[in-house]
Length: 121
Image (cartoon, rainbow, N blue to C red; front, side, top):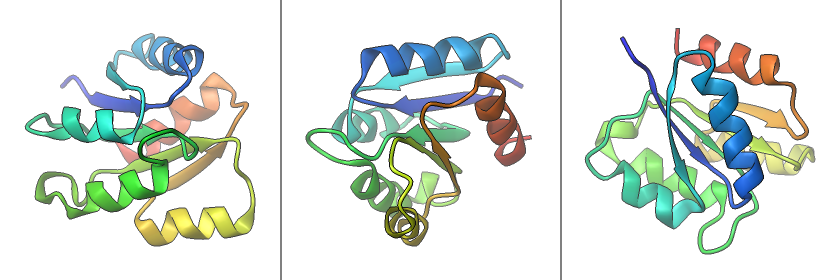
């Protein structure tokens, strides 16, 4: 079964890197450039994993996670944070909001693949 992933990041380069990495592994990847764009794409579509940055315009990743957790269809969808933020306070904010995992940029492609496979076997 094809697994659908939503990748949210305000950097075009980072979105493309995530997409290329996961598509090589057979995943279908939809891209969003911020939290507002991501919420629009969640409306009606089913995703197996959501990957989000924290620092984005319009709606940051923490707010996005909070909003995702309010949606019945995505209440339990794994959310992986992929960000430059590594402070314990930020990680705790993410965990409290409902993040499933946290990866600090720059990341190794195999690290991202391993985490996605772990949360979405």
